[in-house]
Image (cartoon, rainbow, N blue to C red):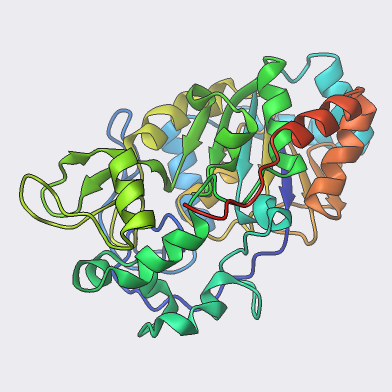
Length: 364
């Protein structure tokens, strides 16, 4: 497995939600006391609501439970030391020669920054630093389930600004993921984003795991009944209010993961087998601080080559070990353009991206 991390800076801010188990938009973190048990496909079964950084020990334990690491790990790492230090050109050769043909892409908020969507935690420009107009008790409250139950208006207002398909178009990085899919190289795209730009770019929904949910479907936060996604969209955008459940009268929201909610079953169901099958992991636009998604890079096989295309070094990437980790500092879209040019996909990338651009709609 080889993995590439293509990411913009996404600095972590203070998280005032003490009981969040996961967050689609804000993310959740773990501390050393958090307990995950392995139970069949649903192996990320969280037993504690405490929040802090995920520990390396937890990641190692999870990887062992998943039986991802090989018994001859030390031998493989010694062999990697003798390999030539890879470059973006080497990545292109891996893909061109089909030595990497089952690619996992792990993407975060950074891949959407050039579309005009802010990340969440960058001081000054991040979403959490620009929510004063909603008079929230703390920024993360806009995605907090308990707060939404009592006051859905801030989320409804924010949803009107961020709802997919209204004004934000896919970036070159999203188009690159689509090209991987069309060329039968994409095993899965695990995205932490809720902007649905992967879908708008043309990625097959079957190849996509939206770790923090999406806006296409909706459900009641009280009785959990399904609610028509199109009707939810219409009420939020046109009537500027949260829908009510027809069964119990509770509030309805789009199926994006709020603080206090777990990740979708699809994430747990697919990750284990995908990690075993992948031969290249591309991590894009994430600071690798939001668990459990941030643990994926630590759980790959020791034979997995890891590439970080990012404005800064993140996670447990090492620039000292030759052969396994690549760190190419720089902008996400620029790195993708270089890679596609080397692959002979430059024209396709440009034309695909142009075809997916949308104009901001004057009316909803």
